[in-house]
Length: 467
Image (tube, rainbow, N blue to C red):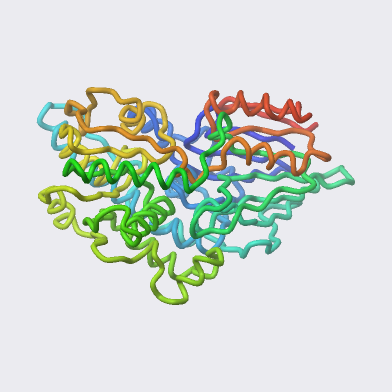
């Protein structure tokens, strides 16, 4: 059996891993890589393998850095099944359509400028029509329901607690010529304990080979309530100076949690009742899917959902916008107000327009609430660069920048150590993916301290064989 690491290797985005066993190839994830524009375009456009050689795909969750290149995979000849939970399938459908729309819109916007400069026009990697084709190959499974994605592999999806429908993948693999089965566990993105909306993540058990994310392997997160307090103070400080809080956020998962926290602040009088705009058609559609899958919420969230007034989805002065016209009108509004818009790394979509219109006003705040890939606009803002380019034009960053890591939906170092330790007695190898060196190397030291020394941190293109 061989593990091939083609994406999210020594970086966080573009998750793409292949398990080759019994003459077949199982692809774990098919995510978009986000980084330098030209590099991202090339890497996402061209796969490091023939899509026709893949027999099946297992998708852990719907975030674009895990699912975003599925339309391109199908477009280039992949004809096999794509396994995921029902909630992930529903979310992925709307997210991939949205991704196709954004690519078409951004290409159209940029091509107007390129045409004026006499530069070659760009093509979207895939269109909405391409994205719509993926749904025909999606095969949904319930949590803990066994299925056989390829010969000799029995898999189960278990709750990862990261976003709605997110799963880790438990696999029992019987290789040809071997009598004993091998247990493999792919973590996907691991959630956190005590987060709103979702159950806590399940821990692995009796695993030989563990593929584990390590995004925050260098630090443990603050308690969610401490992050809430930091968020509250940021909002209050900006409100006091009459400014706008601009938040790049994933439309699925993070947006719903932020709205939940803002509702708490208003209800308990921590901040005045101010307009909150969720400027994302995708977030509106995702909200409907959250309601549809209320049975997967944690117990507190279920109680709210059953009353029909779940606080993450509805409160006074909260406005979800769908149309471009509604989005443009937001920038005509005076502060104080809050704008939550996609994408989470500020690389595409409506957030770019909000940043363009607000980044040069010192009354405003840009709030970064999640990990930002290198070379993205979100990373440059998080690093407080004074001059950034948006849609190719230079802007002076005068707005305050605040980063709150404690709002992350990823496990911190303490939970990652606990995750690996839960299966330590049988563990032969831990393969760390979905993390930069600053996350992976400290985590490897922590694992070594508790007796887990068989770890590897593969580079892109590396292969590990169990022979």
